Image 1 (cartoon, helix red, strand yellow):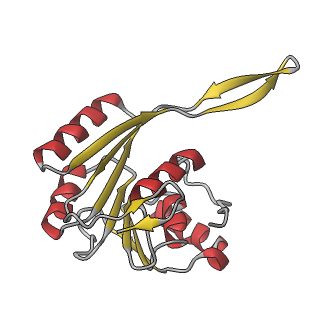
Image 2 (cartoon, rainbow, N blue to C red):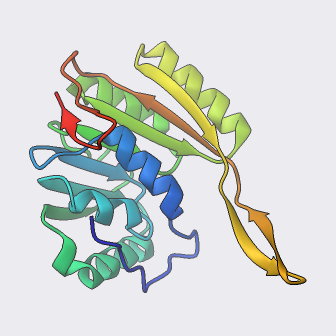
Length: 197
């Protein structure tokens, strides 16, 4: 996968590269998949998904953030292999009925988005949360819908030079909820990175 460029900012900032790597691992996207991102913001997750999936839809409720998504998509045009559509809508409005994989980058209306995922049988669902209280509510919502497979909490730290040595700055912890509303044919990544069904 090619590295992505994000020359345009959306103030909320992109999902960090290390977090995106885990997201992509959990989604296990292939060229046959239809991926949807809710809350695309800078478009970082959408762009990386568009390097793997066959079709991609980015849904963003804020027009200025959707414009940032579109500009960053254009900046990565040569690395994208998917057919990409961007939609200005507040989810669950604007969500397609035939998605294979779904990423929720924000927590607004997540219950409605999860209901839609269950109704339409989305096979792979990943939601990132940075606030503890929202993570608890999201975990409960996943459990209530019987779609929770795992919860992962992780934190990334980046090194910087301090007095001739290396110290670390920690990013905000991320809570990742992973689930499925689809059948048992969910693809999984093997140790070698190859996707199997």
